[in-house]
Amino acid sequence: MAWRRPFDPRKPHVHLANICSGNELRELEPWRPYPKVDPTTLFASKSLNLTSFSLYEIGKDICLVLLSGGPDDSPLPGHTILEPSERLSRARNIEHALIQWYENLPQTSRTEDSKDSYIAGPVLDVHLTYNVWRITLYGVLIQCKTDSPQPDREEYNQKTISACASIAGLVQAGQRSWGLSNGPFSMVHGASVGTHALLGFLDRPDVPQIVHTMIVALTASCHRWTLARGIVRTLWLTLREREIESLLPDSTLDLLRSSAVEKWGPEDHRLFASCAYPNYAASDNSRYPVGIGEVLESYAQLDLGQMDQPESSSRGPG
Image (tube, rainbow, N blue to C red; front, side, top):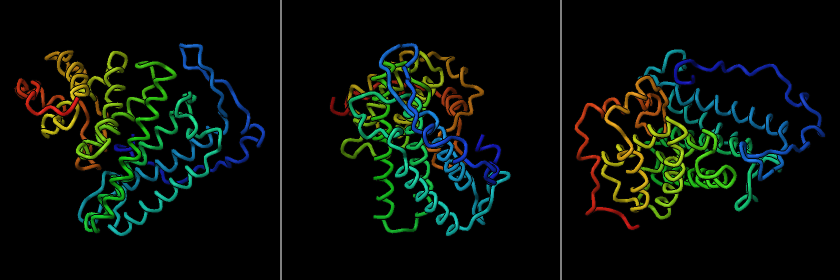
């Protein structure tokens, strides 16, 4: 796990271009949203595997920068100490690599023409991962730029919102294939990262609707993925603690309250006692994200009666 054991930065001695021939890379295979038999979508699995590998290499580099420390801030065990300028330089180089990765995607792995159609599950998973890495990297860049002019920070704020909007669109595409609640966990994770990343932008146009789309996916997944229940509960508590739930419409709050309050028992936090699932987008200190288990345990020690009650006088527009 990246936040406990550092990646080996050495690249594997594998010549990816020699694994498959050009014709094999273009070979299309059918994909179906199991357990459903329809719709059938074609995708190039061998090409996508190479594409995914390249993305995970970029993700490895993001983790190395994310978990590094400064001269006055010890890094996590096994990670390097970087000067602020070096950390910023590496982060910018990684951003360039991420842009190049996306620009070089083969046509069979793109989603631009799939707004109202179906996307093969493996392609959806890669694009969700890509946007999660974008959000994580922009968080690093924003932290590196604390002394920079405001427009510079605003640029990465806008890029973060854009990545979250992309996740919301991908989640909707997954729902068209699998239905409302039967998608893969990558949809849950993407929606979790995207929603947490947007909590500081709820007062901006269109952001509440993007959040609503991801909340729909998270709450619908609660009956299938136990972790989704913990994510939704954590979101609810965070909104109430920050007193920003009034920025969301009634329909979003009703979904959250149904899963995070009405269906949450007094001992349910124990389900996550050993859960170390982190979310770098949800942490003020991205190098030391707090796991859901620790968050829910700390809140369980408090009297949450007031936090679990609606604020009828401050609800947003429905």
